[in-house]
Image 1 (spheres, helix red, strand yellow):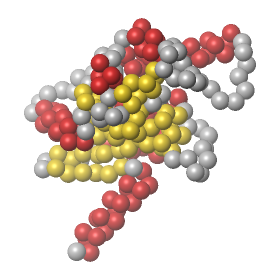
Image 2 (image 1 turned 90 degrees about the vertical axis):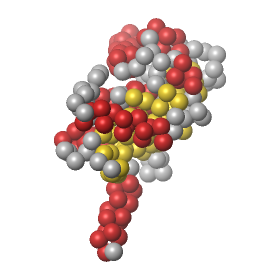
Image 3 (image 1 turned 120 degrees about the vertical axis):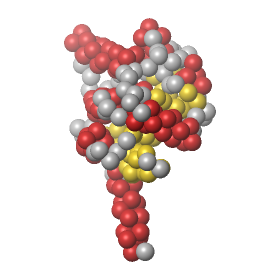
Length: 231
């Protein structure tokens, strides 16, 4: 009894501190990781802001790759976006994991959350989930000069290239969605709800937690049967 209580306490601490927990179902062992709130980068956000700290997430992803007791990764997303460099770092880490990975967009996966959502082998979005696609933005003082524009364009191209490589979306169409002026009242961009994200080729399927687990178990069993992860 004491051992069970200690195990439950350890699991609760994992969820509280890192939004991460190890799950077992039969022979499959899954690491579940959450990306929530705003992705915090090189600067600390206010204490009242719900954040995902990339310096916590990267070691956890390295552990998933190296831990022989972990068979796959389930990534749960409900993020408003955040730091571009840090979000891309997490997305690149997820994409390079040599184990089955599945993502599930819940409330939303906006801005830099889009590369995160498509970084896995297979992706789901709940019917009411949303994804916002918009150009790169920057807070604070911005120098209105050609080098500034070139920097923004380079960063935006990096994001688009990653999304295109890891989804069925086409770059020209994504650029159209980014520059749309008819939906967001204070900005450029497009809001995709549920099935619209699937229609645009960003997400593979509509589904919830049951479908996400079922797909991950399927991919794990295929891998154990001698299949290879495809990119």
